[in-house]
Length: 271
Image 1 (cartoon, one colour):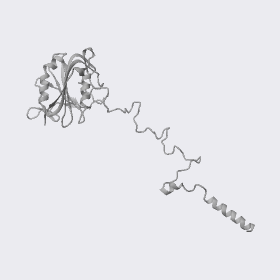
Image 2 (cartoon, one colour):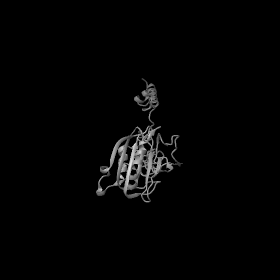
Image 3 (cartoon, helix red, strand yellow):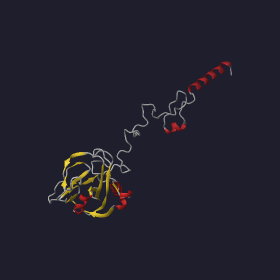
Image 4 (tube, helix red, strand yellow):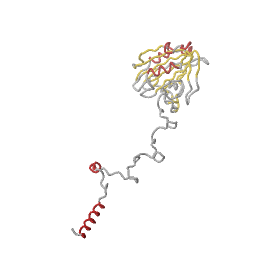
């Protein structure tokens, strides 16, 4: 080969090498699957943070997550596991610790047969009891019992929707925890708890006496602390979920109308 021919061959080889630099094609596993190659880093290596949110501002990695410090409470809507916020205290209040929805004052409707409409039930209330219009969406009915001043008693009927406000035991324990016994005895040990039926529906009937002490709730009255009180209560199932009947007040007043309360529950009928 002449010197001229050798020079031409060297120039041709250099030209071919320049047109096909190493790395023009993506790895075989990428192009065979149709994936585009990753963009090269200015430093020649893949950015390990590519596709990750900016930790310093624009794309918040915590977006959509509850604020653990307060503004968006991750436990909102959950019942208080410690029983402090009692959904059945004789006050306006939610079982979930939020203020109840206020409604226009509403009395129970009277049916053609003279009975009162109570959700899916009809019922006969004692004639001596005074029906009070309810203003909370969680109260189905409210009755004031006749009693002397400072010896009042009241029946409130609560309804929290088809799922209720926890299990039967949860609610019984909340009620009993509001009563204190002499010598620190447990109210559960002295209470009477009966499984029965009212209106053809499964029911639990509870009675206990003692010192009645509750905490205040948002939107309701303040704390209650009264001696010589009595609770008569019932949780009654229905086709639309449980109804909670809570009669509480001075023992003498509640005792005087204990039979009337039981007769009222016995009068329940599903409409």
